[in-house]
Length: 377
Ligand SMILES: [Zn+2]
Image 1 (cartoon, rainbow, N blue to C red):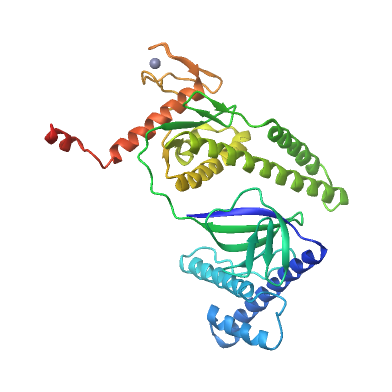
Image 2 (tube, helix red, strand yellow):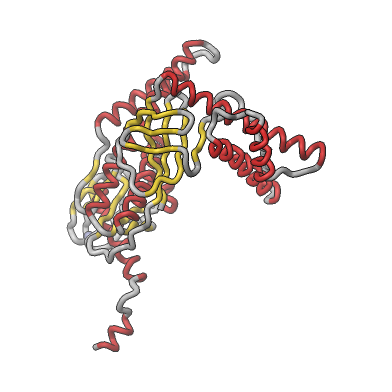
């Protein structure tokens, strides 16, 4: 399984200049190669392949061009162009809107990749061939073998290194403990253990700040310098919100994977629309999808299992006696007139989700089937 690690880089002035130069060179090469494909086709009816263009690049380098950039990084540029052409032809074939590959203007080419070698991670230093040793903020240890290194510049002008590593999956253990996770209406999640996980206060504050900044931006006249400033502020705060949220979701997913062998989520693709028609909830839905992905990747490494179940009716059903107890969104408590169970509605839902996940497993269980059991006795 592949895992991507994203680390902020803190280049010095000279390194930043080299990074910028590399990005510009890659963009230049991309546009050059695109123009070459276009000309070759229009004037001679020839389709250039990746191999053709890679050979042309070798010739260019012999003439002393493109010397400042590591050769595999340049090859990767040609590979990206090749990919976008293949996607273009696929769309044409499929009768979709084709969208011919575009020339990249300043600011539209944002990253370059070392596809195999030419980079080295050593402690909190990342050494890039032809650029230098750059300090990074390594907030997590990288597990497994690093395969690729992509350098990216965001809209705020910050540089990031994205390292993709590969770890062999651990074969799943036979689950002995299970936990059901419900998307809370108030909190991030409610768990079948009876706990809930709330959004941390700083996250809520940052989100409120973002809403204010967005409102502020919408009032500014287009083209004005105030608008530009307001826009930069929105970009800065949204980045902040995203970072906080990811960090928090990493902690929650870690906690889930550590707490049980089988982790059961509701499958939002099935039930999301029904449950969260509240517009303001879309941010929460986004966090929810991310939480599932983070948990899946951590579970794969730990040999644990993540199950997604169709969670329709899980908030209505009684987790103790299974009868349907209708509720509106405003009803915060599950109150069963049949068996007398009283509990938080989201916890009740998470218990039902847990049960659904366990039931799904029983069907898949390859060990003693009913008939075998009968024969044995
Ligand atoms: Zn009941």
